[in-house]
Image (cartoon, rainbow, N blue to C red):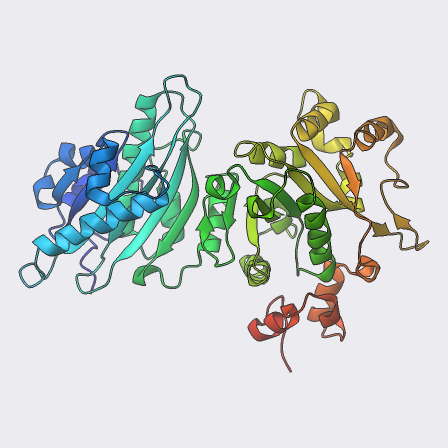
Length: 478
């Protein structure tokens, strides 16, 4: 039995902020604490202002001083206060206090929760726009274990007051969604933006966990963030959980491979291994400070017109099984991807691509939205510390291996190509596996669907077994 529901149509006609807060306050079963670091007591304020908060709010706390915060929640080994680890410490500590002070035998019908945020708003010089972590740990039934929703936000407003107000609204929407829309987590994500402008605040990481969300795959939640325009890029690790891009990319050397990976083949892995060897042998590059990103664009996922979520999950599972970090982005143009990476690192960056994809980036049709056209795009692409590692292609008609030395671009951009090539921005991958040049993902996919033999040999070791065991990409066993 869930005691959280209080009315039948919680989100019809977008309820006001006041009605959301009041609905929670008037639910006699909901009871918890608010702990907010930075941006004031903006979330709790909504509940106090609407009335009836005494039955819902056990305590609010704002531990602004770092020493005082450490004394309550414990020191962070990295001395980071706006972090996921600090947020989790806050949620767990405050919830334990409720459990200790509100014995279950005396309050059998209470659904406890702790809400917390740790936020840094825009600085005085307006150099850093600010960001923060926000989360709730809660019950939807007194007899159930706790579930958790954690999100990371980035601010785009240019004044602290507006950012504080956005925190208040987002936090209220998160709490309301947790209690009244936990059975529809994908809708819950959308409703985070009730009464908020998408341009004001960006949610770039979300993770659901606990018994209420045991069937939720956070990779699909990541996909929804990009698909709904809440952020332009998300990342998830080999374990399938979403990770904060800023934390993963911070001060790292980055190697990125863009592709469909439908499925991942031997040629994809050969491209990765050979380009990784080149990058890590570069002066000043250390392996422990280098990350590899397998990137899939939203446009690639929509190549058939609509996003096939099962197809997306099939790709994601294979890449994760190989131990890779995956990025889903809305960056159709490569220069936008490089600019995104540049927000987090000044380290070396490399893009690995095949000859056909490389030639395609010289197509001027992609840059008509830029006032400076292709010249502006390439200036933004190569302005940073970027190299392109070029994987060769075998001409299907002649059998000739095509590299940067004999590829052909449109005569109008030939001099532009030569400029970047002879300035060392394009590096050929010569130690490649020639057998892999004839492998194409679409061929493998067709063979799987049509039950043809021999596709297993075109895939990295173990991948064929995963496809068969999980029946991915339309595979049907005998």
